[in-house]
Image (cartoon, rainbow, N blue to C red):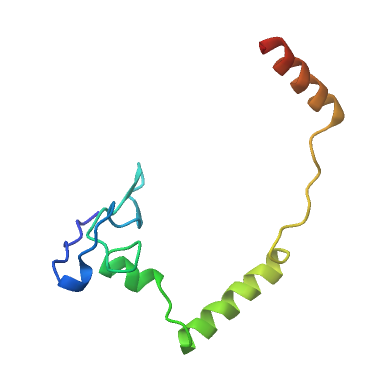
Length: 100
């Protein structure tokens, strides 16, 4: 993946770990590590990709997309799944007891 230019603008200087945007090159994942934009966990380039300003048309559009996705997959919380069987829990309990 092409290296990102590190910004040196004063508003982009921030003490911290570096940009948290995850770069996936197919074989591995790593964070960008670029200079953080003030008040953000991302460099200026990735902040522009990830941040939606409050009160904008884009925010309204994004919220509609999220609500539609939530409706399709079952709301904010997924449907409750079936838990592990009683037999599995007993085996797990015995395994833990024997390791103590």
